[in-house]
Image (cartoon, rainbow, N blue to C red; front, side, top):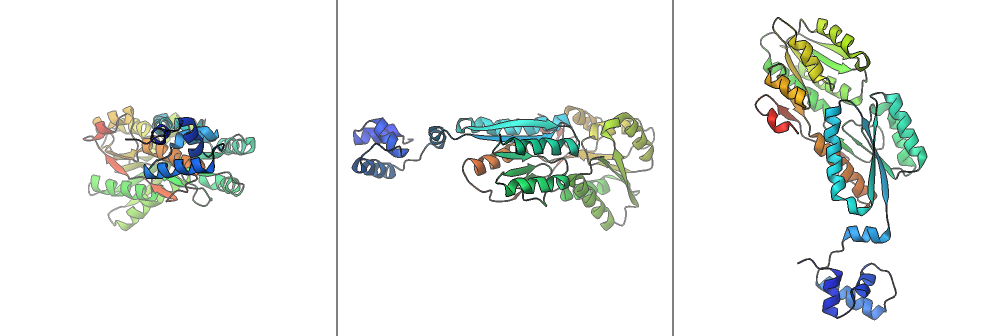
Length: 341
């Protein structure tokens, strides 16, 4: 049975208000009475209601959460994870404003600078579009007692409090391993990234290339860039550059778009590997256009990122680990249905 202030008051034949004043250190009670209450609380193993305690102190924390708009299906899952955690902690006075930015580093830098300068927020949870340009801003915020947490994409050279997300070097290596195992004797590969050459993209590319270099069967790995601002034109250029490859690794959030141009290839279609899950990607798996996709639990990423910020800002609890790495999961046609929302 849960021990409450009312439980203690009943056993001591005191008013609940008196016991409540003692438990929350509000004063107005004699030392003798206070001792009786505290002794009884200890005897009954009373655990304070942290939510009530925060409400009593009228403590309120306001946090900004910044992440890109694209791809929409992925960030919807991240947002779902954020809202799940907020539902659990809604009574603590912990509030989050979600701010979505275009997939450009300049706009995100502007948004982050405005957040810090506004003095409206007590901290920032961010998926940095590119960790390098934001590193100095994050470090400056930390040095001025403004806590910043990263998720999904990291800024490891900054002094961010913690990171939640995948090890993208491992993700690239895993994609390389899949490409090698799913292709035949000829092994010519292409990696497709987008124009924002983020820390995440670099790590994926390095991981894939490293695996390819270790495998003597791989003839070459060509690098192709997708321009999100001119998608149709860019896709047609990429189509001309993948006619001679046996496998493609889409390291950015354009797996479905690339799948559509692969579907148009009339000769032997290359093995296509990418990331994440959506209704469109699910259909491409079922149609045998996408061979496999690598998922890293966006729902959990959003939830844990906010939970760590809450623990730090509200409970004054420093993260046990600075790098909170989520597991990589290979999804194919056979298990894809379990990854749909």
